[in-house]
Image (cartoon, rainbow, N blue to C red; front, side):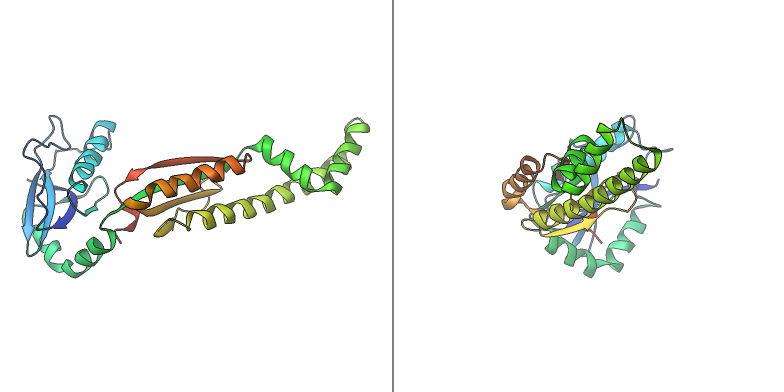
Length: 238
């Protein structure tokens, strides 16, 4: 039977409790596979595994419980090997890399931070910060909206000002998050978010990190911030 892999840790890790179960219906018992100084947290792989909410939550629950008692390199959902021997082969082949990552990620968690603009608030800010643009907008309003050319010119200038504001705000968010994050991994471009980053945060610095996010939100009403975490450090396994 194929082997489903949740994460990799040191052999000295106590491993999952005997009653811990993972993916599958019914949920399959979690066990371990060891090779050298490394240990993989696994279960049998169910047939026709799909990213259903139940199994996604089970995957995360196994990693969360295992992380309480030691550093674990989390695998993303759906990691299936042909069998236990294949898992052992990977542990042996990449032992140095896994050991280095376990040391680097020990005592750390991941927070995902996404930011976008509140359109009404950023438009108000752009007009407030740009007297010339505000005067043009007010002149158009007095003229019943202005001519087609005036409307077009105003729209183009507003778009340019908003894009400039996006760059400024994105830079500020990154700068502030880097103050307390050990590392930052940026998400893919063109996601629809002004900022989409994963932050590696030491457990001892979690409150300081969340305080920075809270201060950013309170001081920037034009921003809408969304924070997820703490999570296993998926984005920093390498």
